[in-house]
Image 1: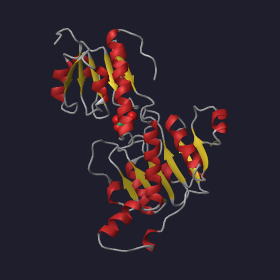
Image 2: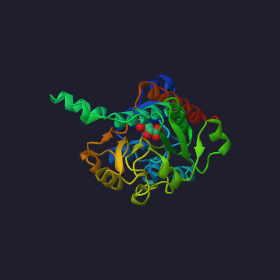
Image 3: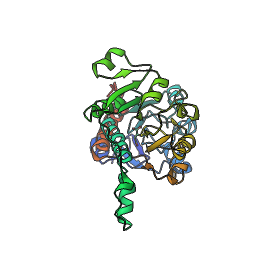
Image 4: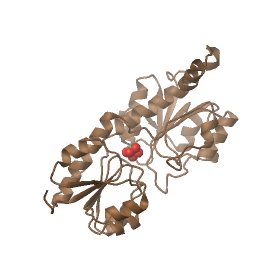
Length: 313
Ligand code: MLT
């Protein structure tokens, strides 16, 4: 082994494509990124740090990593990485911004259909020895107005796929060009109008100080009775207890939730509600998305360690 090889520290379970791409140009080490003392000790010797969403890469980790040149996020969201703190220390931050967008979009749609047709509840009931049909009457997506909050890459994929279901698409996104929305056949509206008109709402925003709590009790008071809501973006964009309350009251007819205010979690007021379908942050968890995320970040890490230009994916 070459003792001068840069050390790449992998802090979470990543696809094997990471190792295939990194090859033997670097020395690979592993650590559990949620074990803080272990992470702080291991990062001190690392030239690169690879994470998914569970490892918090904050100023403390960056300070401990005094040899760090690059932090790579095998996914899209950078809310677990303190990017300004990294930039200040000259540490490059890379992600894989397109790796899992299709998977995220497909998961949001899976949740929407699961809620609309009560798939998990009906499955549980049948397995429990009941043959109940009328109890699980659902609703169609065809002909409904679906409101997409956040019309970025994932929001657009969700919208175009739901158009094929016969839905009418409206969206709220202050940053998207009206011409782009029109090209996709999507009507841009204000958040209030979206809340008032949508039969189903799917959120596709990054978590930032501006978007946190965007949909709380006040917004949920404006929705159409029985609206279905999906959040496969980030926990906390919709206030979890306000959503649970709205479902309990029946104002919100059902919800599909993949992400939570605190993760990991095994308790939420949403878990007690039969009209809510939950998954443990699985939006990006497909073989294809993980393989792509691994390849994309490993390529960027090699470029960064060689001191080469790292293009945007
Ligand atoms: C993302 O931001 O890309 C997702 O949260 C991915 C993940 O689960 O790692």
